Image 1 (tube, helix red, strand yellow):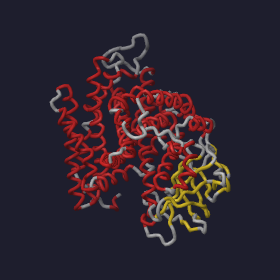
Image 2 (spheres, helix red, strand yellow):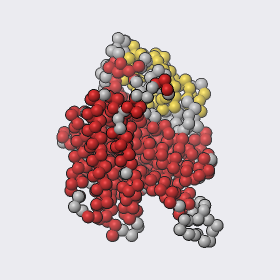
Image 3 (tube, rainbow, N blue to C red):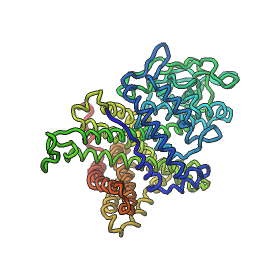
Image 4 (spheres, rainbow, N blue to C red):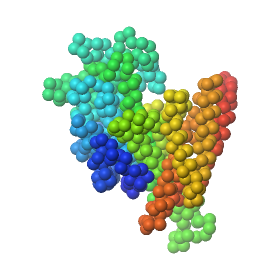
Length: 594
């Protein structure tokens, strides 16, 4: 069976060395988040992930959630682990102290989420959705609703969900039919059906707070007529404890391919009592706050599963003996050499390592910019940070979920036939990783969002938040002889990205299908350049510290960076060629020939 050990050294490298931690401690409310505090927090989070969450991962997959007469029970041990997680303050780690949170940086929370997803991604869905619901309520609800619900959500006593999808609509939320009728007391009665609701019903908390999209009477058609409502499982009584059972119940749970310990529910609303969050017909704006958080969280799911899959594959490649090295016997005491001696095994392991370490840097970079966006006293800095978060969110969601899935598949391949056997554990990673490419906006939708919304937004302002720093870094390091193996490939790949951006912008104006046809390859090209930019910076840091390091950490970092630039980044050439080929080969194909 696989095991999991949190990659604390690499997490500390990204948090404290790749990026300047003083930029975070300079933000209001983050003064105490120094490396001296961050280190023990990460260590305790690692202990919890390794010793409490990971041991429930395989058993939770085997048992799954159970449904009976509207009641959902999570697998054995989940309720105990949840109580420890909540009582330790982990759910409220990044939340406002005014609601009982600890006010810690979002960049730190990224690493906490990664550990939870690595250890037990099904468990992580319960707490991740609560944080997203917290943000939406905190940003848009009335003070009365915030004061009533947020402290108990921060403490983990109550949990949260997001209820968007209906049987007739997934991505196209303009087709929503759930209705909300005003009551005389200022609340609303909601009726309809929601499907694929993660953590819609469970036994981990005493109340579940649903954020539900619905239509008011005579609302405008499409997404302009959608409002957001807070609908509790139990209506709080005068003491703010769970009171009357509300008219929102779980009709069934899905029998899924993966994340079996995460309850995916069909929720039926029959005159369920809810309260408006934000303004009428402006629900999508509020829900997107939660959806964007969820999309970042889904990317971190891919990262976390990729890390676990990588660790499992490395352990197996060291222990399993099969065949002999192509260069001669390496292990004469045994009948065969370890898998680790074979080039193709090393290719897969290094690809997995390059993706997970690069993805970790990307996720923390986004987390830091969320901190700046939400906390900085400088309006210009907040706007710039928000621009970058807006631009890179589809990359984080789509690309990290994709490479997490690919990494899990490579782990199965390293194991060979034993990887296909359930009790060996890695096939669960492959199944659990698959959903991340679908939910919270399928990856194809993320690509369309990137080319259709983010690229042209504000006359290309979002793009400048990425393009300008990359070009500046290339220019400032162009003369550094030690970095030429990183600067020159980055410059070439960045040039391809710039040309592809221009091509999509021009061709897409004449024919939107041109942008749509190129969108998936463009997102991958953009993501590889983003990772190359971060890997080049990581290599630069490692070069300055390699000579004084006896642990081999920086040497391995440089070796991984070199592998990424020589064996992974060249994919940008093929992606560029596909983008420039245009849409004709797919859009002109006769429909009746499919």
